[in-house]
Image (tube, rainbow, N blue to C red):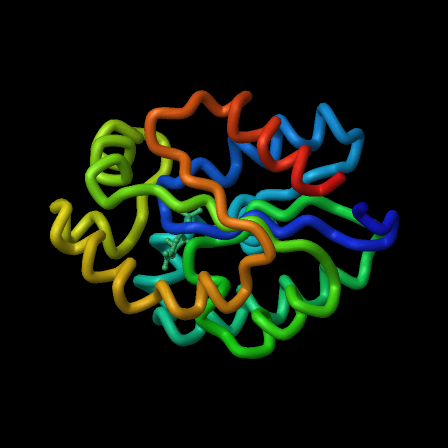
Length: 173
Ligand code: S3P
């Protein structure tokens, strides 16, 4: 059973559907949700790609982490985290301590299909490496961190968002 003070962290690769799921879960569970990239971007008045390009990836990771660790001091939220939030040790420890973490596990092929069709959100890395192989390597490099954080793993290929949300809700109960 989910403690009322605990957050829900949705983690997974770029394009795994974290924001869509956070929004559905938020409506169903009546817990506010936040997309950390969108929020950070609007606070700074810069697109994520602009932060990467004008500052650096290292500075983006630092800002992302400071923002994340500060925001989770608030009341219970559902967090649609950035795909790389799990890279920082402090973020991983905070997830373990402050809530339940759900990993959306999506195949590189499915990620590729979604990202190539996502005209709205630009991802700095993917812009320069528009291929499945890149996503496959990124997943291999990061898998250990995603698994380390996850309290529950849900496979998302060939499932509708509502099915995935129901699976998560069952697990949280
Ligand atoms: C990143 C994923 C993006 C965003 C940034 C870096 C990554 O978030 O934080 O482009 O390193 O995987 P989404 O997973 O929401 O696309």
